[in-house]
Amino acid sequence: MDIDKPLFEGKWICLAPIDREKDAEIEARWTHEAAYLRMLNNIEPARPLSPAQLKKKYEAIEKDMEEKKNHYYFTIRLREGDRLIGFARLYHIRWAHGYAQVQIGIGESGERRKGYGCEALSLILQYAFEELNLYRLAAWIPEYNQPALQLFQALGFAEEVRRREAVNRETRRWDLIHLALLKEEWTPK
Amino acid sequence: MRENIFRGKLTRLTAEDPGLLAQAFAKWDRDAGFKWLLDDAPPMLWSVDKIKEWMEKELENDESRSFFFGVRTLEEEQLIGFVDLWVNWVNDDAWVGIGLGERKYWGNGFGTDAMQLALSYAFTELNLHRVTLGVFDYNLRAQRSYAKAGFKLEGRLRGELHRQGQRWDVLIMGILRKEWLEKNYFECAGEPA
Image 1: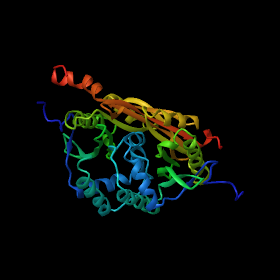
Image 2: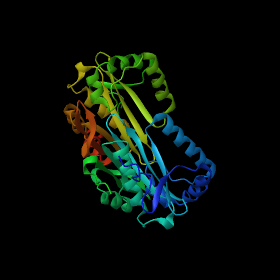
Image 3: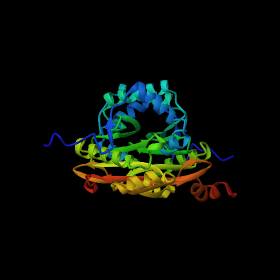
Image 4: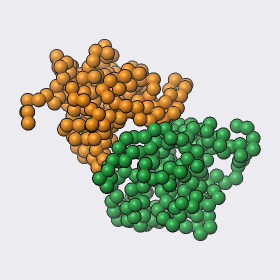
């Protein structure tokens, strides 16, 4: 057992807790960028949120994590300055079968395409497989979110299902792609 | 307008009293085999009263998203199972779940009949674009039934289930509105869509 092995820290970014007051102000700004919300979520309509609404959302997330024990939510911060740039989470965890869904978002548009998402995803995979001892992680990504598909595939996720025309966005239909990574396929970074 | 869309060849879709449903579910839940075919939750036993509370919530709170029906046989009027559509309105997509708790009705077309009613409802009343379901790879009877109802295999979730010491896949199947119309509407209504 190596107690100095990093769990929450990558080279550039780290996984960190929610800061309800400060994060709400920043995330409220992100939610006014429709493209970001549309990349993240294909189930609910994109809508801007106020800092007060986000504070409530954070409370609900932490309550959920505490009571149901099937949700692990982290913020992603630049190590330099501890500045919030996104979030990463494991959710819908089914302990009996060892599976969960995984999602990450880099909300700060100026910090995208710098490898931070890759680092954050690597950290949360390590957390899922080595800390929670899960067997299988799944991600549902609409076919229009090419950056996410490329990132997940680069870290070993394989396409398992194509739900034909399951997403309706910008007046046309898109496939919803289910990707998954099994523990035995995962290469620790 | 077409005939009664709640009535099939063998079964009909019904609204049931939560108390009666709770009694039926409490009985069916004691059949672990039924539960292993139904979903991924570890089979668990609950009181009729607890199940009734959930039923009341399900039937009252989620009216706009969840469309839950009892399934009764036409002949004996017996409650043999349920079918449930869980709708995502933004995408006009629904997950459908079906279960026949009464084993003696398995393998005789009752489930397929009820599923066809649910699809009729999904496409002609809810006006959905597609319907999705998950089925376990050891449940061959259900896979045949869903294929008969028009579902196509869209992929498999590798090893999503861990049961009896083994990993099993979950198959995802879907049917699009246009596929359902091609399969059903021409025969039933006799006119082009």
